[in-house]
Amino acid sequence: RLVKDPSTISAAFSHDPVIAAFGSETSTDSDLKDLGEHRISIIESGVADGVRIVFDNQEENLSQMVDASLNAIGSTCCDIEKFHISTLAFLSGCFWSSWMLNLSSMAERSLIVLNQSFHRSHWRHDKWLGANLGGWFLLEPGPASPLFEDCQEMLKSRGEEKASCGCEWSLCSCLDKVEKGVKSEVLRKHRKNHFDASTFKKIADHGLNAVRIPFGYWIVTGPTNADVYDGPALDQLDEAVKMARTCNLQVVLDLHGNPGGENGLRPCGREKQDWTWKEWRQEEALECLRQVVVRYRGFDNVTGIQVCNEPSPAIPSNVLCDFYEESIRVVREAGMSPHDVCIILPIFTQWRIREISRLWLERGNIHRYDNVAWDIHFYHDFHSAWSLLSHEQHVAVLQDEARELTHLHAAMVGEWSASRPGPYPEEEVKDFVMQQVLAYNHSSHGWFFWNWHDYSFYDKWDMENGVIGNGRLPRSLSELKSQSAQRFLSLQDL
Image (cartoon, rainbow, N blue to C red; front, side, top):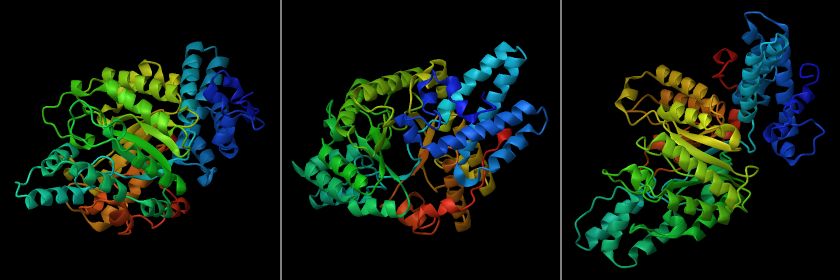
């Protein structure tokens, strides 16, 4: 049936609600409408053609034959979809061939992996192509440098010694020394003005379709456990989501700073050298997530919620996965369904991808949870080893990263930049940026550049002026759609 009639592909596995979303062309299921009939027909016909080739041929150049079949699809789907179609084709062919030869164990294995592959190719939203709005609802030097500089000037004007302000915690501590009430006044003004409606319009005008908004838990609940942050400020986060909606931008709400911190570094709000992972107040974090979900579940442009950011490598993988399972439960029970919102779970560095994804698979979570994605941050910086690579080697690493992303059930690149150790030639900068866009665009479910604007103007961390403004990407990213993208993946990578 599979080989003779492409429309029976999903019917063969109709027991699975995710696979059922790939129903026949006459299906009225709302899931089918979400996914798009055109895309479904591409997947079905692509798989069917591949199955015929696998089923009817025993030739050594099988992969090239299926690749040639996929090339006929042209630009109608991106590399990650072609990769999934290839996988589905091979596994379907292997299943039927094994079944006919009475190789039951091989047939069973093919069917299991085939089922997993359907989940990988299942995605409900437009791919995120966006920028981070860091330094707004969680302060860091660089994205929020003017505020840190103003704080030092305030201290100086009062005859106070300059203090070390390298994170939001230390900034708030410094502002507390100035005068009672100053901290709340300064931070409220910053949150009102740092980004505004014109920012969102520029982002949309440049062809991006999404923003990732990092925020600290204190924006939602106010500071707890004697923390010195200032909050809550949900009314101002409301405005951010509304401004994005006005510009037809998707929003990923990113709980960037958990209570107690998911690491001891300034991106989570406080730089603390003696931090240990047991300081992470997970129950508070879950309550914070619940409140966020209840507040924003009615916004149709909120298509992602991230449960934490860059968890420390010191956190045991089983502890991390336990927290992720609880986070999924809280988010879904509070009203953000898998039909509407993707839950994003950070692995952070690629060094932990296999460790955490393997444990997740062993727990059976790939099939247990729908519309869940990993977040990986691919920075070619922060370690001297990167300085040893040539430009060509950096690009080769990008290709490896792209391949690694495709083997996750779903993934996004939540942060990346143009930065590498030391200066490097402008033509290489431009190529490095373009190669990253192609790699992540064709192997993941979305990406977000860090950051939209850097007020210290480190140009390789500034998408608005340093990347787009300097011509390292087209003025409108929609122009990339008309360019023939380099293929990072081929069937021979399977």
